[in-house]
Image 1: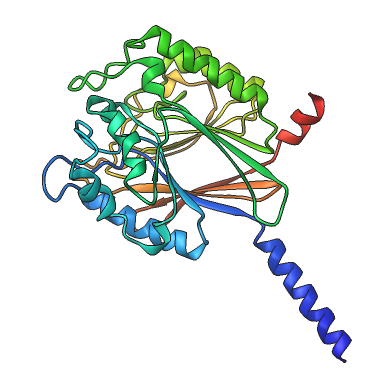
Image 2: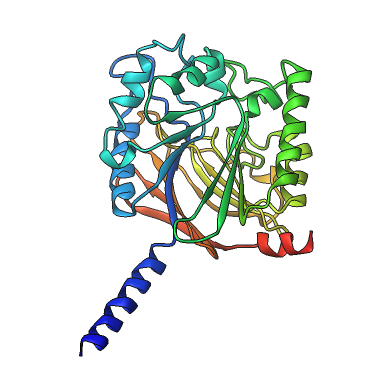
Length: 331
């Protein structure tokens, strides 16, 4: 009887351990509040609440922030009160106190983006060690590696006009800085042995909305994503959520830019490859009342992506099987 009970306990433990062999995280973009008190929007506050709940329910490991962290003109220096008012005092849930991996967006570059790098030394959870960087993690209880390559798309493509926001980025301010980053991106992709490989930037490669596709990313980043079998490209910039997958490509394009407000636009619907739009969500929201974020769960074999609105409703989800093993075996 003792042997049988011991066997049952062992089987239950193994099942629980297998079920826990996942890495879960939450992700948001374009979440940066507003210039005036209370320095956050109702949508941002609701997103923060629902993110905290989802992170707690799923034992989320970390958070990813995809830029436009502080509207409208970024921060002035590392002591700017916006770090407290828009970030620390809004995302207060205990489940959101783990590390935040941060990149800069165009609005951050209107201000002092280097101050956001410097804030890494001032916060136990804000982590932005440079304008672009990479992090590799292992799913607990497994040997499965996940690599995140965080890039600065403003350095690559240039900054948008601060008032004529519909205009595309004009090209890099420094060609040398852009080329240095392009070289680093390809070297990092080529060297990756990870089972899951993600690239994360602020500007989209593809988008059906106001800003549309980013030409230089279509021309130079997209071929690299395909060549090195990148699992997904995560981004923001347009204030909605989109899922795009091209025919004859394994790259998932996940746009999540609705954490501060949403704005409906599909004016670039004809600017992306035919039949590639899998999902789109936005509301005509000029009051900052509605928002959304994304939850991601990765096991050794399957990734699940779920879009969730500021009320806690699951809007859309999809799954993606791991393809990197085939790529690694062939190389």
